[in-house]
Image 1 (cartoon, rainbow, N blue to C red):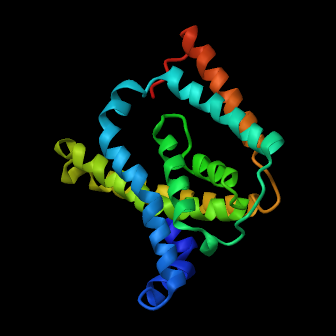
Image 2: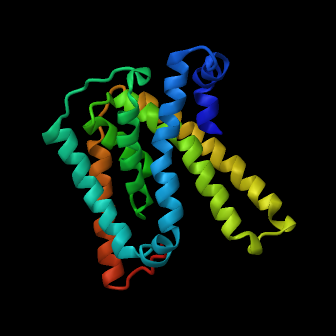
Length: 218
């Protein structure tokens, strides 16, 4: 919902002009194409991921590896930007970003981080990569949330509605603030600081879990 509000002008324009505008049709198709890999693979491996990957070593490892990948992209690879506008993306670009998004299924891997960094590697500008990541979040997170609720439906009751309501409001406000902040941040900063945070936090989790100083629950 936060993404929809932040990008409402773009979404509304796409909906209104969809029947007649090739530009709007291409954008809508790209979002759908980008979503499909996560939708298909997510349904296939959901149980395996939940059963085998939700543990401190995997989460910590994903944090550390992700941090080093970000450093490599920002400091060494420095990919050449070829797409400066989200409407200039092709279906193949969208598919590639969608495949990268699947890495976000690994616990400890940021879905938005994977798609933004992956998009940059594929030639998207930092701004375009972030925007497409946010648009992909709409069907991806709605689908994942609906599927999780369906799988856990036996545990839900009417009494849970107030709790869900509070969670929805808090998550909406925090997501809206984070999106607005990130869009301003990427205009003048890179992700190096975030990379160091991921590496540091991953090491902390590994060390504290190994010595049983903290009982991490993934």
